[in-house]
Image 1 (cartoon, helix red, strand yellow):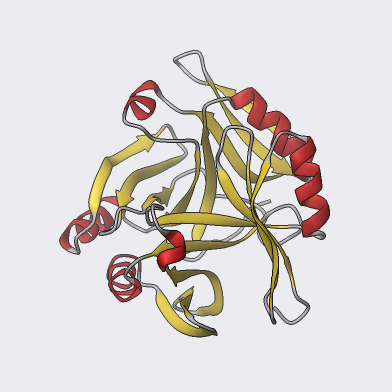
Image 2 (image 1 turned 30 degrees about the vertical axis):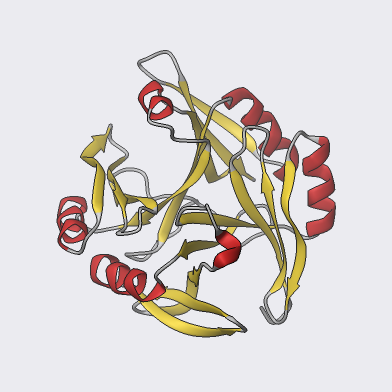
Length: 262
């Protein structure tokens, strides 16, 4: 089963990790994911996680050059584009940095890795044979992506110019927040928030939110599996209950139980 992802929307969620076997065990036990492994030419393998037979995410072992450059274990987000090369040039023209020039991933997709003007890294996905994840928003799948930035106005301008996003202000108390959507789909696929002094020392970055039916039970389960709670569970009125977890290798992600009206 595949989803017809609209242009500009998130299509794929990929974990780069220092311990792939541990990650496979942790996420499969925490979210009930199964695994489909593909051998790579260098002797490693690429793991696609599945939920009820549908692709939900993936993971790989961080390459030596990434480790040498100080890249930590992390979750990354891919966004769908019609023309990877043209989008890369648009990113450059609007102050972005290209970390990886466009290239073909076998018959699956054409991709590139970009940093926005503040350095938050994301990937471009021009589909070939691989359309992206086959499930979104259901329990144990990704339901939201989020950019934490120190200049929300500049981020709004950059992503609007490069990926065509619409950014709608959301009343989030003292925190500036924008709900992100693509033309023709006003429901929103993610958000961006203005980082304040509480985020001192943390660089601008993208995060994923995974839908769970019980945040507190998920935190307890994650800890028994070797994970760590880094943001305890808290409630956001009309949105849901949220917490942040780090897996055994230190890659962080949010879990969320949406409110009935969220």
